[in-house]
Length: 290
Image 1 (cartoon, helix red, strand yellow):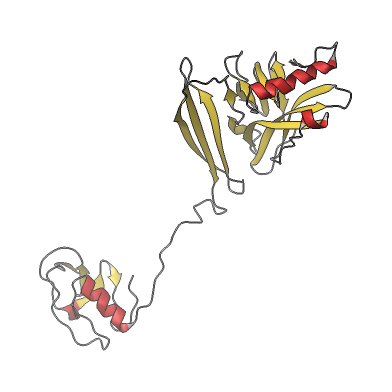
Image 2: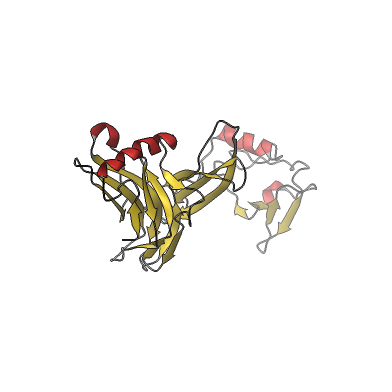
């Protein structure tokens, strides 16, 4: 075990009552105490995660990580799977306090009122990550805030680092906001991290896709007028007129008909000779607009 509980000195377990004052002093916040050791920095190697030394405060109970604490996953998932690292303290009715780090799939945290009930369990999420089918760990992020003491002076709050990540399809989306203080200043930074999974097909399933629409005769005439064709094509497929000046470029096809290219000023050939518009086959009288 590479940590020790500072509110339990091994002589008088009632020392845990000091946690109530610590909780008050921290404004009821859980977090990693800033400026102490390595602030519980995280590293990943293969399927193992190392938690570096630091000082964690959970509901006022201080736990000092004195060496690198290593957590490992013994199996490999069939698909990318999200996990969380939980820091947990338990208070027994006789005053004994226990602490542990452990890994599990995301669940609701237990946060009993230890100082009202005199016993219970209190949890906080230290970090989150993804375990991949090849055994590697990705998206490792410390989610427990790094906290500092506060006073009555002005505090400058600004947006810090904003990161976005794309997760594997099937994982739950995740959004986290963490708080940190810029070293040597009174500036408090809010870091935002958003993780959005891919669609099941591996693409953005929520994207808007345009499909062909069959238009009525009046809609066809309106569309033709919008692009400058006037009444060049009518529903009987016989009546034709010269194109407007907005339609001015065409190319002669091998079969002797023409492909009309919209958007270049000039004169077009007789509309009766045009069989394509911008490379798409043209159907007179009720065809689909592509």
